[in-house]
Image (tube, rainbow, N blue to C red; front, side, top):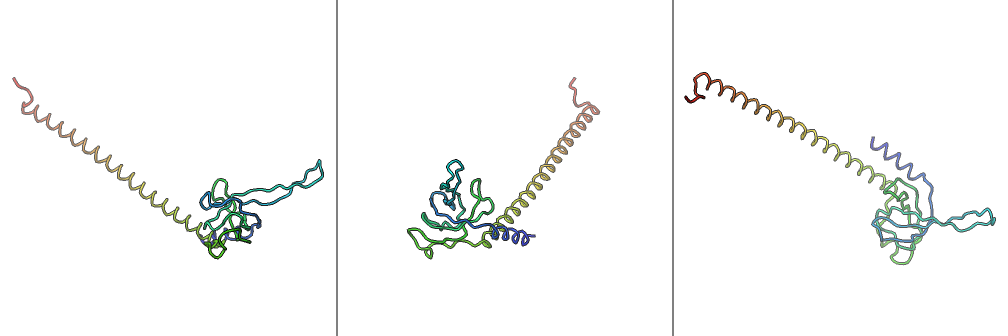
Length: 174
């Protein structure tokens, strides 16, 4: 089952379109960079195209991008509320460290396998938590049964004590 979901996620991630842009900010948020992608917008009144750049928050799992890098990004699964893209490769480095001196960018296969491993760990934690909750509930039920049995024994002891006092006349002082 896990291998089929890995294959499905991998095909989705690799079949998505590729967008090229420039890293605007890097290093402010862990594993996140802001990438500006160029675009044009048609103004129907002036009958002219105008620049319409878009910025995307992009997931950079290895923190390997620097400001000024030209990168290829692709839409992927959601990694946070506003991050829906992932870095595919560095096309041209900006100023600073060369690409060989930076941590490598994980491939699509690595990202999918990491996601699958994270999901399996989460399911294992959930299973352990469910077992712990069931054990806790059964322990609480057993403790409640013990408490009711102790109350019943005390009541029976009090009843027996009162019967013996009445029978032998020990309870009244005359």
